[in-house]
Amino acid sequence: MAVKDIIDALKGISIDNTKLSDLIKDIKLIGSSLEVVYRLPKKGLEEDIKQKTYQALESVPDVKSVNIRFIEGSPEPPTAFGQPAFTRRRVEGVKYLIAVGSGKGGVGKSTVAANLAVALLKSGYRVGLLDADIYGPSVPTLLGVKGERIHVDERNRLIPVEKYGLKVLSIGFLLPSEDTPVIWRGPMLMKALTQFLFDVNWGELDFLILDLPPGTGDVQLTLAQNVHMTGAIIVTTPQDVALADVKKATAMFKEVDVPVLGVIENMAYFVCPESGKKYYVFGKGKVMEFARAYNLQVLGSIPMDPEVAETSDVGMPVTLAHPESEVSKAFFSIAKLISERILRR
Ligand code: ADP
Image (cartoon, rainbow, N blue to C red):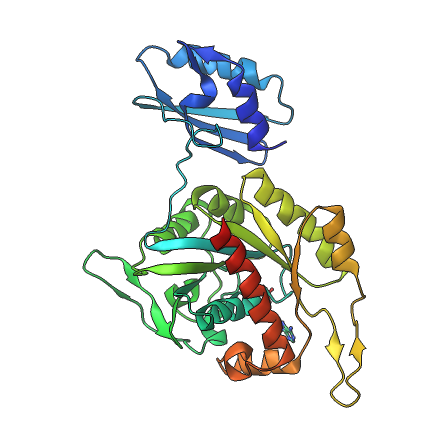
């Protein structure tokens, strides 16, 4: 069940000559709990709208609780897709926001995010990298900006750090020390993340790469529901355990109508430096097979290369340190594919 099914159900019921779906200002589905904010076209209609919503939702399985709120005002005009305009916020100054997610940790999501950001930068775009991986922010290490102090501008917006021409902001900058576990929970965490997303002086960017926390918990879902994303990329290794979680990540983005641009296969193979022979350490063709089954595009395959880890550890992504290497070429070709596809739209 997706938000789209709920909107479809609400389309079928009108109040005061207006479809319920056209009154939606915001809609969120977290697990089986639905939250709807309606624009109230006329005072006194609240109870009627609530009853009709419950009635419409009887045909939608799995919605266990509904919380309905109202704000006053005239209905939003439908968008070009015939759906109501959601209150997803755009990040100021950013043309295209690409979220990089993964079903599980340790598959190289942050490494891919950082190298894609560099590859886009070196292709001539203005790029920012936002590390929202609250469970293990690694961008400060990957880009050698650990321990940076963050300043704010006259509007109290965070000012990203500049490194190699990239604008960089990491939730890690806001933690007292590297070893401090993130103990924020629920609303407090979301408040911090929201400030972190929207109150930033990015200047003008073509692309903002958002490094999401791994997995598909509430944090990822809430971010995907509240931030206007151009699309999402899912990073995986070709192992069955990782692929099983890619299914969940894909379903999450689809549920909240964020287009999945495709999958990146990381650590796809290892090239023996002596013989030049390729070894498919985790298996060959699995990601392609998986992508075909789920109608996803494989954006590219990144080899496993010790240089990736070495360069990351010294704070210079491999795409900068060794731009001619096979692994860097893979990143550049993915960056080209993504940027061309987005710009063509
Ligand atoms: P995640 O963000 O998914 O938790 P990381 O980006 O932190 O994963 O990567 C996990 C580890 O794997 C890091 O030590 C990183 O340097 C290493 N790594 C990632 N991609 C590659 C690769 N293609 N070749 C070799 N090592 C890699």
